[in-house]
Length: 193
Length: 90
Image (cartoon, rainbow over all chains, first blue to last red; front, side):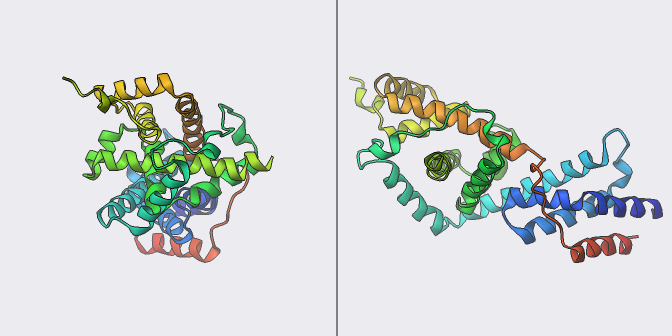
């Protein structure tokens, strides 16, 4: 075990900042990101026997961290659904009346967005910062729903079954989160070009 | 008589159905509702394209491990704490 602790400590020096950055962008929360990195190294240490040199240390550590991040968003999502958090509700009401008329038609000013299939957008660091900012501005439960949707690569029914929450609620949240993100990108990127 | 009106939905509902469609979660009735709505609504047809584009952006953004050089540093204090924890677990 002497060996394991020595190796893990080397990995801490080598990878912890990179892991912290990643966890921070995925959770938008410094202390959470620090805790997740710490837990990752403890798990790595405890299950060091299962690490075989088949994969690179970095790949192995990031896969543990990714699971930790998914767990974090699951807890977040579930607890905010159960407690029907007020911020999400207020934000929903505001957002929907901002996007749609009372009859449920698109408001004129919200019909046009410049968003297009453009795979090179993410190569632009300035656009990346805008998108990070837009994701951070989502209410907690919406952010967690979005993170789970893309991190888990599972069907919505499976995600909801595992969390024991309703799928209709999940789709409402995804719908609102994407409406808000589209609008945020429009306001903070395309209108400023 | 069948209630045909229940197949006519608003843009707000149609845009929700578009999200479900992209996640393969539409039931047969919803499929028909969205199909009919898109026949008459060019804005929702455009929204679907944009929502797909947003999916691509978000998927790449969220699953990407490289942060494009904008690395943050973990506090040295926390690094020492992690090492200490590992030492004490022996």
